[in-house]
Length: 367
Image 1 (cartoon, rainbow, N blue to C red):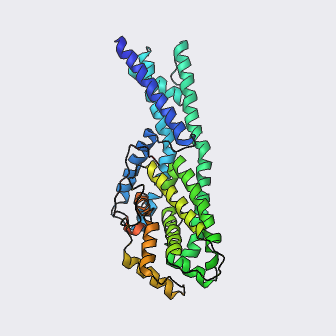
Image 2: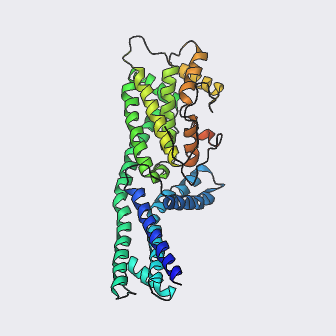
């Protein structure tokens, strides 16, 4: 029996320590560090919401899935508290509180600071004080970080909302470039658009890997999504670099677009890394992409009809576009599927083609 008691204390202490570490890794540690408890909880809640949304049209799915991240996030402290309560139940039982029901009552009373069950012996009283401190701390920890989470969400949505004005809903690179051409701002697309979105991608990489619940927080408008917005900007930059002929003497620099694409696919890849999504880390320029040549030609036709001058060698332009797109093609589609993004050109409209499923246990990536 002594061995059993020791094992109960060791198991309870381990579970409590792992739970506290999970809370720290989830909301405090300033880097993408996965937590198995948080991951299992979000996966479990996600499956419930996915089942509830299955078979419905997109507007109804969107209304249901909009509650997924908030519900999982708000309930997460309860999961941590419950695990601490279970852990301390083992500790109390292993240190002499009998029967198991009494150990559970003392643990629950302590972690919830109810005071309905209390042991006056100094070792047990000390355990109760420690457990109460942990319980309050775990709840306060996430509550204090909710403003940070929603501040990051608000910053993300500012540009996503501005994109609707420029590129429509759902966003399209053809609509975006045609609108800039009509208002005479095509020569400013690098400085006015790509520089701002390069900064946006940097913020998304930092916030959506440190606070991964942000990935599933849906936009206020059903037609918007941070994933489809990212895809639209990356495709726009790829088309500008590969296909659009700039006016002679225009004050433009292709470096801004190229840096934005590089920043963008690094950001999407690191979010994909957190969720264990597989992709090719160093694809060749001629690696197959999900966009077909006919789809590309259709967008070129739209651009020509809007008055944009395109490069004469369409075959080379297509190869150049595919060479840029290959860097983010697979992760963009996988993330669109992960969040069930609204239909949009060249991203969520083909979700499921690659089906690189996220894994419960994240593997570390080597870059």
